[in-house]
Length: 349
Ligand code: GLY
Image (cartoon, helix red, strand yellow):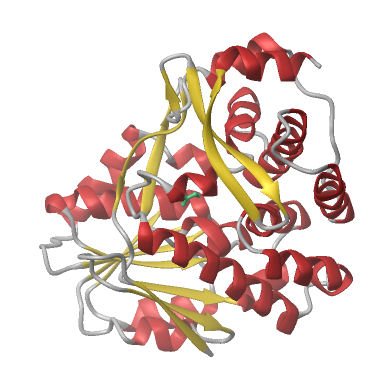
């Protein structure tokens, strides 16, 4: 078992526990508290949860809608009203157990209920483990775009238990892996080399190698978040691949896996960086090679006009530019304003 700490200046600490077989003990730490658990539907009958929930007083459960369906303001109202019905007060604890959508929507509810109650996160997908559970972002979607309504409400405790990954569907596994590949390309050269060297073991889900990748990806994210919790500067690097990724995902209207859209967005960001002269051809080729090794192909894109309609609503747009994360080497990137018409031009290539 490993523990990492994330403590941006002036903020409470988040403790990340990484290992396997830890869920029972983790929940046991909350036994004396009034707990409201927001659960992914597939977690409802999880044996460890049932053993804990059925025996523990003051344990309230809400089974969320599957996937992105729960990431609406209407679904959050349902959760918040269930919190009232359960009699939660300001000292109560919300535990979000599931994939990224549960963490995002459950986290938003925890941040809103009585102006904020304590949150713990138990991510059950690789995507939520390496990215969304750490750093405090919570959000729901609007029809106009993804994650347009949200807050920053870091979990005080996060449990990363790789046991959940043994049964994770392949599509979801590869979706999560794409966020680790993003960290490798834009933030952490050592993670790049690890993913490059160990691709077979990673794709085989060998637990020791997965643990190393997850720990490295989280440590990289913590280093960024500790310096910029509210995304005024360096945290924007974590949006690498997301400008186009969110647009593709938005056009898919909830049918496409987030990480797979980000992986396509990474191809785009690498090409734009190369064409702008920000990225050497050799580093471009190595990065594309890593994407390809993990099965992220440069698939044909939807029509440019349709993509641009989403890009224009991106949270990173300022006037006629978007704050775009451009890879600049292996494990390095920078954020710079790129004109929207330059994005359009690149898309049309
Ligand atoms: N997923 C990007 C971030 O947490 O900032």
